[in-house]
Amino acid sequence: MTSYIVLMNWTEQGARNVRESPKRLDAARKQLGDMGGSFKAFYLTMGEYDMVAVVEAPDDAVLARFSLMLAAAGNVRTRTLKAFPELAYREIVTSLG
Image 1 (tube, rainbow, N blue to C red):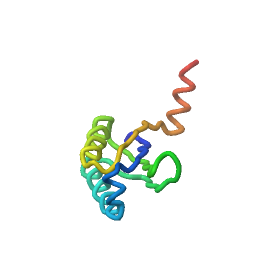
Image 2: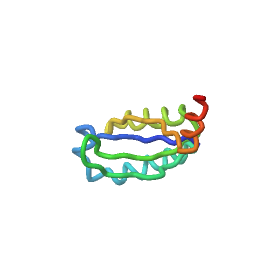
Image 3: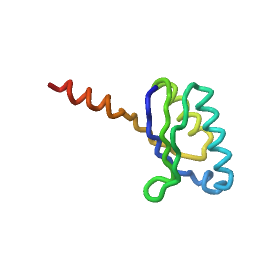
Image 4: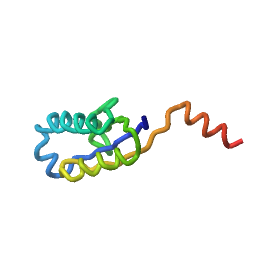
C-alpha cells in the first residue's frame, strides 16, 4: 500500500455545514475503504490547513479518484502528498551512491 498525507481546507459550503462534517468523514472513510484504501489517522488542525489525514491506497490512481470524489462533493479542497516510509527513504538515499 502507498501512503499519502492529505491536507484539507473547508470550502465555504463545507464551513457553512461544519456540523455535518463528522458524517462526511465517516462517508469518506467508507468510500476509500470500498476502493481498497484506508484512513490511518485524521486530525483537526490549526494553522494553514483545517484538517490532515494520513491515508493508504493501492496506487496513485485510486487516491486520485478518491480526491476527485471529495472535490466533486464541494465541501473540502485538498492537497495530497505521496509519503515514503522510512525504509523507502533509506533505500532511495542509499541508491544515490
